[in-house]
Every structure is written in C-alpha cells, then in structure tokens.
Image (cartoon, rainbow, N blue to C red; front, side, top):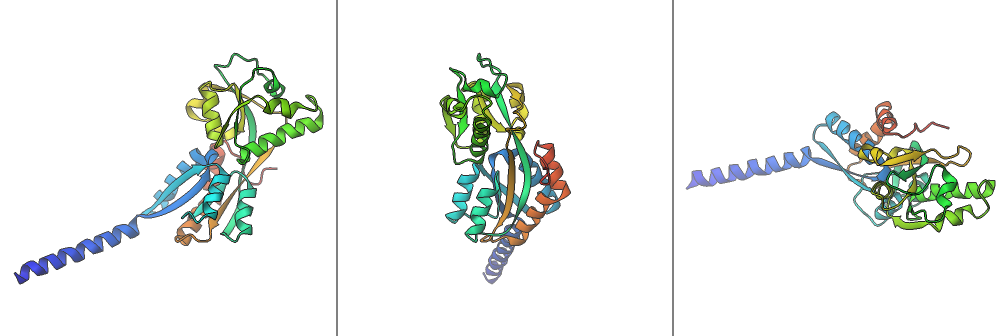
Amino acid sequence: MQKINHAIVLSFFLLCTCLAFNSQAEEQLVVSAASSLKDAFAEIGRAFEQDHPGKKVSFNFAGSNQLANQIEQGAPVDVFASADMACIKRLVNKNLTSEYAVLAKNKMIMIVSKSSKMKIDALPDIAGKGVRLIVPVKQVPAAIYARQILTNADQAGMYGADFSSRVMSNAVSEEPDVRMVVMKVAMGEGDAGIVYASDVTGDMRNKLRVIALPGQLNAVAEYGVAIVKNSSHQDTAKAFYNLLLSPKGESILVKSGLLPAQTK
C-alpha cells in the first residue's frame, strides 16, 4: 500500500511539473492590431514564434478605435498596433503604454467592384447619382483619412464646394473596420469605397478595380505601435515590438503593401 501511495505522489509531482513546464513553454502574447495589418502581422507572428520557441502570439484584429477602447477598459493586451498615431497617443496620454513608435505608413486608394454597373473611373465619379458607397464607421482611422481626402477636394474646389456632402450622401453602409469595406465592395454589396492600398489582397484582387487618388488630395496614413504598460509579458512584448521595428519586420510590412515609417 505504501508503494502505491509513493507512486501516486510521484505521478502527481510529475504531472504538476509537466503542467508548469507547459505553462511556461506556451507563454501567449496578445497583440491587438488594426484590421489592415492582418496579413502582415500573421507573417510577422509566425517569424516571431520561430525565433522564440515556446512563445505564442494571439492576434485580435479590429478597428483601431475599438481596440484602444478595450485597452482603456483593462483588456489583457500586450502590444497594440494602430492605423493612426491618434489612438496610440490617446493611450500614451492616459499612461497606458510603456513605449511607442511610428510603425509604418500607408496610402489611400479607391476600390470599385468589378460587378458594378456604375461608370466609376476617378474620384469625382463616386459623387454620382445612384452610386452605392461602402464606408467604415467614422471613428475608424480609415474613415478619418477618407473624409480628409474629401475635405481636401472641397477646399481645392476641384469637384464643387459640396463634393464631400454629395459623396457621403451615397453611403449605403457603415462597417466596423476597413477590411469589411473591402469585402462588401468585392462581393458587390456596394459599388465603391476608399481603403488602404495594402487592403487589396488575395482573392480580393480579382474582384476589384483599384483607382489611384489624386496625389494632391491623398492622405498618408501613419501607423503606430505601443507596448501596453499593464502587460504581464513585458520582455516578450518588447521582443515582438523590436521585431516589428526591425529591418525584418519592415520588409514584411512593405511586402504587404505598406510603406516604411520614414516615408515622406
């Protein structure tokens, strides 16, 4: 009987040791990132896990403003990547970050569904009667950049002083993030949208026409990244943050359609 007890104790000890080892081996880093970073970050996450055995990266992709709200409410996030610096600085001002930097830049483009029957070949065409425009909710950085483009057009007087109001009157749907805008236009649920250049990926390329926006009107999106101060994995978060800002991280971001942080 004594031997059986020793065996049970030994087995329990080995089980606890194994569980503790697995717990350490499977340390999980939570990264909240703007939806437009999904493809690039998936590749960067794989590279990080290869370079750091036992570290796992879990991603939460959504609109930057929504992700910032979650962090403010105490969500357990280690690293935050935003499609604008405004959301980053909001957290900085609330003392919720330990480190932050400009991550990359992006340009805006217009997309048109290949199934659309509307004649849309340039920016002024989306103000036309009957055009169905898909837009992100106004809190999302992509919506802010798009509205900046429309305001720039109004101020330049290129398409009439009321151009932006005519365009926005064509909005038939407001989406929680820019990737949903791309998907809905690609599916033909809308005729057009204004999105990031890096958003036209994979199968979407075959379903969309991409139209460049006038350079003097276009907005350059500035992405940011920060380590969340309350992260319980500060060392791992720092390692991931460093990878994002390294030449290796930059090359993956650029390959995904973004621009280097130093782009003017």
